[in-house]
Length: 61
Image (cartoon, rainbow, N blue to C red; front, side, top):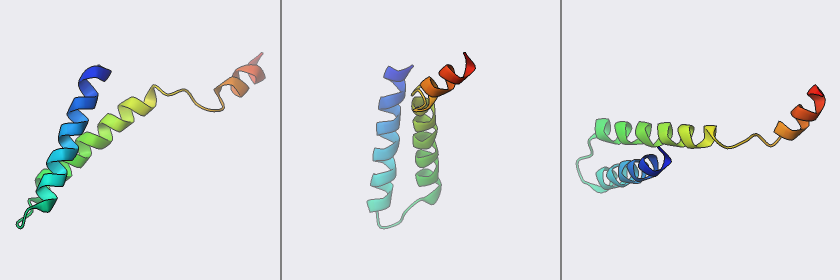
């Protein structure tokens, strides 16, 4: 899933930046692209372990 998610996020940001550079901006396309990027970042950061995870595991034992 990660291999598919990163290219989709890159394309979404490229589309958002391209729309922003145009003279007549389409806000809906920019919002959709940013939402897709933020959803991708949410999915990727969910797999990153917490900094305090080891400390919590020690407290349980």
